[in-house]
Length: 192
Image (cartoon, rainbow, N blue to C red; front, side, top):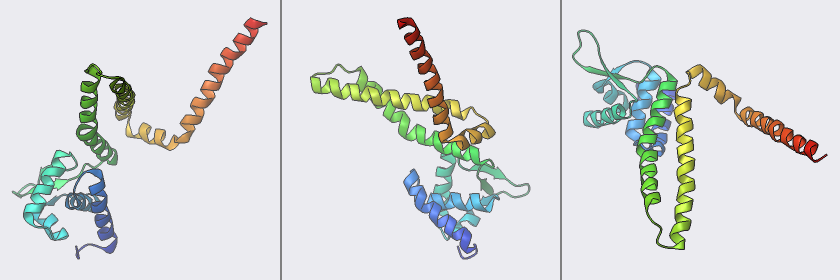
């Protein structure tokens, strides 16, 4: 990593540590960070050289990054080597990470919950447990449905929505006050 600036090294090391928290190993996280921060396609030998990793470790890491759809394979004219680069658009990277996490973590949980909800509860304890599982299932379904809707938004619209932050909640509170306030006023008029 000596060929990289201290700033770039710090980013790569940090991303490696964060990668383990996101479900990828440290080496793969560092490889991705290198490709992302340099902003140009690299071949496996260049990645190995920059990060002082073994060529076999880089090959395995690149396969994992391809499985996550975080890098794509490309070729350069006149060069037989394979080059790798991350998606250009940061929103595509964000969506790929979320989709893969969903596939690996959320979908198996939903499947387990569906199976559990189909069982006939054998006791009151099972009935209570099943009701709690139903609540969890409904929340996960609601959030994945929302995620599907959000994924269809353009990056510009998504960025605007995210910038609104808590203002969305305030807007919904105002809407509820008008909606429920109006019905309260109508009830008052009917009682008079």
